[in-house]
Length: 124
Image 1: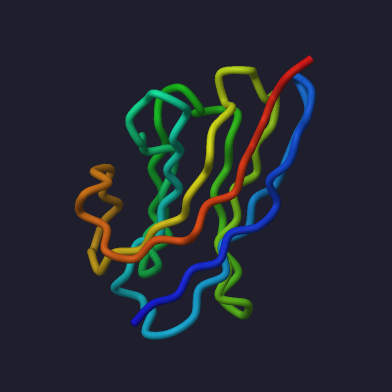
Image 2: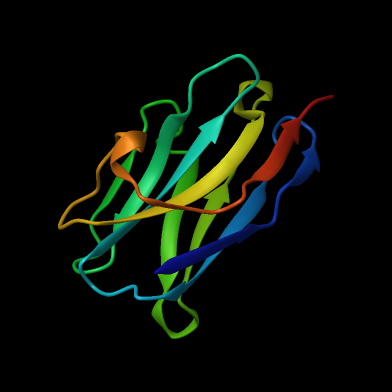
C-alpha cells in the first residue's frame, strides 16, 4: 500500500509562487510514477505534472509548462511541485497520485493511490 500526504497549499496573489510537497510512504519503488492533478469547482480533475521514479522523466500540462516544475528528493521520498507566476485559473484543490507505471500517465482514472488534497487559491 502507498500513502501520500500533500502540503504547501495556501492563498496567494497573481504572480506569486508556491511549492507543494507530496510525501510518499509504503511500497513505492522506481517502477512508480507520481503526478499532480488539480480540480477546480465544477470542473473535472486534470493532470498538471508528473514524474517517473525510475528515469526521472517528466511531463507537464500545456497550461503550466514553463511555470511549474516537478522534482523529487529520493532521500525524503518526496515529490515537489514548484509553481511560479501563479494565475487565478490555477485555483484548485491539488492532489498527488501514484501508480505503478514505467512512464508518466496523464489519465486520472489510472492512478490507484491518492492524497487528501491541498487547496491553492490565487486571487487579488
